Image 1: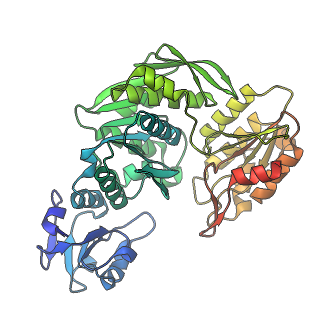
Image 2: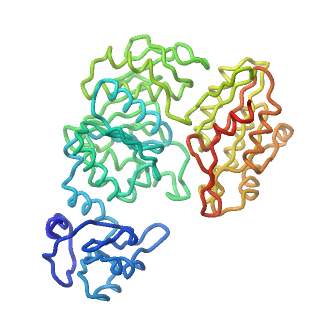
Image 3: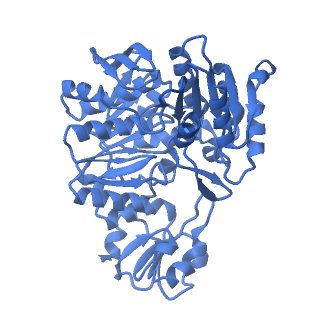
Length: 484
């Protein structure tokens, strides 16, 4: 139990109705999780206004309601706390309730359109191998203290995040490596996370269904660097045109990494094959068990972060040479006695798809085919759909357009939006198979010795979301079944 006065520290309060000295058992933004003496925060979300669930929260035992809509004040005999913007205080309330646990650990946030998952996974595995009690918060999973928790969001909601930090700190975690999404930044989910170091990977076309403009998307990412305090560090990819923008106005010490431009942490590709990357990192030659030029950036970002955190260079490079990318990130699949190779990748933006396809084109023999199976998610940025199809057709010898996570949309409508990007000269090599498993089966059927199949868009996901329901679906399992 914690006194409400403590929970509301540093929060502007417009009005309090009923006893302000009561004790609070927990804080919630989901009315279904409320219990006796819960504090429930009602706010206007992107799709839902949770003020409508105040009654439900009270019926489950909530004794205090934080809200910003005066219409609901005093409706029931519980305590009400009126604030200017209840969504903006969720993070502070959660941090106050859990006693600001992120201050007790070194927290590294990685943001950007692509590369977040691989970079955070490399850092977690690197520090784990260095025998640190570290933690990972990623799109795929949360890892700490021998616990493996599947992720629902790239960055958890503010209350779940602060609760997670408290559990991590209490088990002795010293470093946390976490992905930080633009949604989390714009919604204030990480506003009260005490970041020690922030990393910028790159910025390309994505999430414009939510942000509406690229400038808003960029500014959301920039919030991570703007909030860093003096004495902290930021590490930005200076090869990306937005790298300098990210670090503008940051109070933190600015550091850069790159492959093409002069930088504090420099990498260079010596060779790039399906076996891996031969690189120079910090002037040292190292072989990485990762494929693709984009992964060279992830490796240099991890190296630069480790250097800024004071780790031994030789140890870091030695361990990096043994690590692999995160699940579903250019995940190569080879089945014995099958003459072709397959790969699964999470690429769901035009830029990410182009990078993966260019990597495979450069690595394969000219006489063999690259067959790409790709779709686009429903209820997401429609502008990128024709761009995705165009990129697939440009680099592939054969393209199968299929369903991804259609969500509330009709799969055929999504694919019709993609087909717009296919010019007449490419139409003969493009076919549509709406059922994703049938599309993967067709790719396996037509593949010949030496060919490469890329199944893009879902990567590590183990489901397909259709009409609000998630059905089991694993690209890797389905590929292996049809390759056998």
